[in-house]
Amino acid sequence: MGLGPVWELRNQPSESPLPQQLDAGLTAARKPVAESNHTIDLGALAQEVAQCKACGLCQTRTQTVFADGVPGSPLMVVGEAPGADEDQQGFPFVGRAGQLLDKMLHALGMNRRSNVYIANVLKCRPPGNRNPEVSEVEQCTPYLLQQIQASQPKVLFLVGRFAINALLNTEKPISQLRGVVHHIELHGRQIPAVVSYHPAYLLRRPEEKSKSWDDLLLLNNTLNSIVQS
Image 1: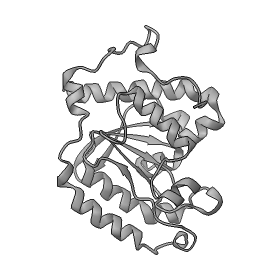
Image 2: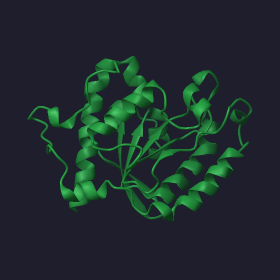
Image 3: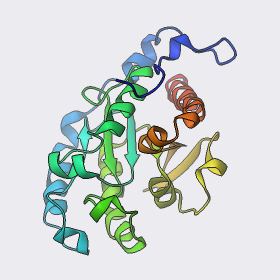
Image 4: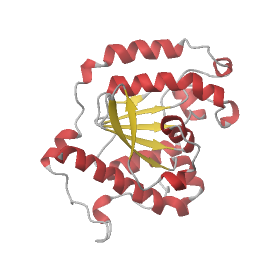
């Protein structure tokens, strides 16, 4: 697709070893769990989001962009805000950045049709794809937290500084937050979170893909460690 190198874990050099195929425990953990347990809650929340007029973005959106993928999946990806393609189609990560995200997930043996849940901090597209404003993030973050609570992911993958800053409550740049596993406390539960650059940023700065690859390795190891614990 011309989006850069093939994201394939099994082709990585020996200094970053990973199993060539997922073990049975990890494969089981990466299947969607309790899909029906959260459907009604998330469906009602999606309807609430669709009717939200808490900020001015409701005046310029085509539609809200709630989520994609399988609720109850072990991995939840959190991005920043919908773009033009997402605003038209009503799903997150459906443009070129979404294609790159899908390749990254594929490298982990995962995809949004079977074992990944995806959402953004903002549910409406900022006009002209401008950066989200502080007030907009504050209005939308409670919706995101409810999505996380309902879906109960084992690990969060936060891509882009607005997703990272909102959930980690920090203004530090991504460069200072990468390489370690963070934890987000939600209703007494500690959820591991790995951070990385937004796929749209990687399309603009392909030289940074090697760093994002390291983040994927950390994400994969985090998922493995949860299964083995």
